[in-house]
Amino acid sequence: MASNLFTFICEYKGGTYVSQVRAPDHESAMFEWAALLRREQPIESMSDVIAQAASDAQNSPVLLTGLSDVWCWSATV
Image 1: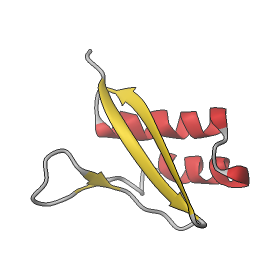
Image 2 (image 1 turned 90 degrees about the vertical axis):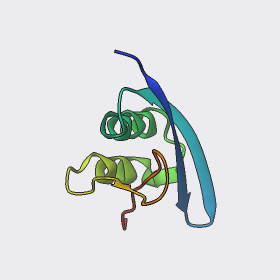
Image 3 (image 1 turned 90 degrees about the horizontal axis):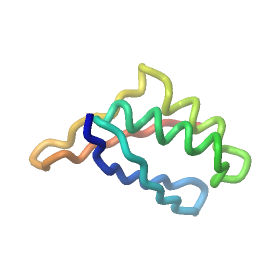
């Protein structure tokens, strides 16, 4: 199965954190990004909390209307 490159831009408390993961689809990419957050801990003490929110099935990304393969996901942590 081919992997696509997904870019995540996370804004938290004045910082902007950009990372990329490879996955077959946007849903798998969310789980890969959560794993990356847990492994690399780029967002101070909040990486695990944000990763948990990203792994929550109730917080699915939403396809943005009028754009091609652009998704939005947000959570309050």
